[in-house]
Image (cartoon, rainbow, N blue to C red; front, side):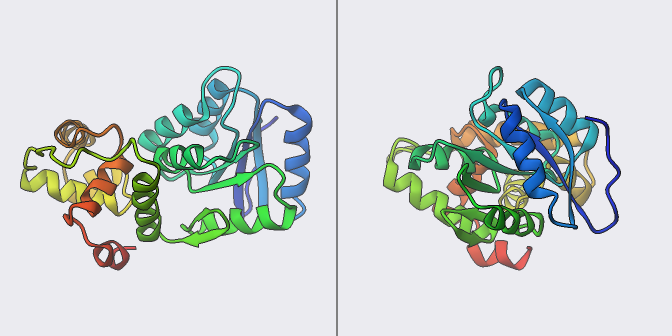
Length: 238
C-alpha cells in the first residue's frame, strides 16, 4: 500500500492484522469517516514495526496474535521508541488477563473484533484525544493506572510481595518516575530535564531493577500503590 498524505486535522491509522479480508473491511469501515485516513496495512509484526517507524501514524489498530511477533512485544517496542503512536488492540481474545497484559504493555484501548463500525470510530477518536478505553469505559491516564492496579490485585501474580524491601530511588529517579507516571516518553523526559535520552534510558533501567518490575507501566502502578505519586498530581499534568 502506497504512502497516503494525511489532510490537516485528520487522524492517520495503520492497520495490523494477518487476515487480508479483515484488514480491507477495517479500512472501509474506518474511511467512511472524513477525518480518518488509513495510511497503511501490515500482515506481520516485523512489517508493523517498520511501517510504524516510516509512517508514524496517530493510531495503530493491532491484533495480538500475529504470525511472527506477538502484539504485546510490538507494543512494548513502540512505546519505548514511538510513544506518540496510540495503539488500539483489536482481537478475538477477550479474557481479563489478556486485557491487563495489553494495557500494561502500552495499549490505549482494547476492543473485540465484533465491535461495530460506530463504536470503533468513537474509540479511535477518543484515543486520538489522549483517552483510554477498556471494557467500554472511557478513562484518563490516572483512571487507567488505578484500573491496572485494581486488576493486578484482583487477578494476582503481578504485584510485589508484601514484605519486599525496595531500594530507595535517587531524587533524579523519583523525578523521572513522576514523568513516566504522566505518560511521558524518554524523549519528552530528556527534553523536560535537559539531559540526553541515553541518560534517561540509564535511569529507567535502574528504576526497573530497583523496583523489580519489567516495564514502565508497572513502575508507574508501583509508584501509585506506594503513594510516591498521587492521582491528583497526574491529573494536574495532563
